[in-house]
Length: 144
Image (tube, rainbow, N blue to C red; front, side, top):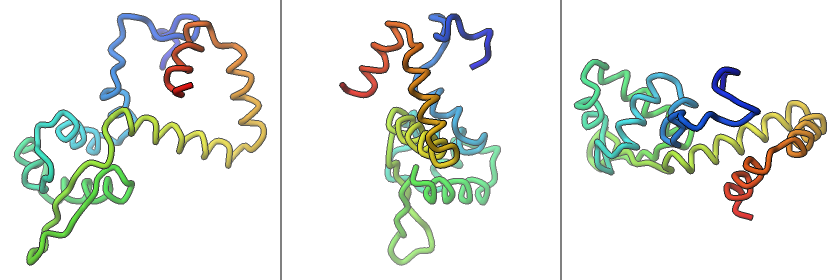
């Protein structure tokens, strides 16, 4: 978030910060376009590349196929071979909320792996500086 979109470390109340938009912001541009169509339910599961292409007609079939395959490699989509064909059926493994939780855990693990105890100390220091509202939101997110 840019400094102009924050006040005292908290998001401004008028900002559009729903989980779908937050999740899409963590993906590449093509991945985000494809996942928007999927997460908004525009295509029904299971779906094939052609189903997604009908919604994103400006993109080439092979571009969508490659991007969906990469999303499956990342664990965001599942892919199942269609018996007797060279095609695959796709499905989602998680919605936007679950994706945000997964990406947050992944990013935290990467920071700790890269910076070790210094990253943990930075997290702990940041926790001490949270407002009451931020602490309550964190408590709700963590389920404790």
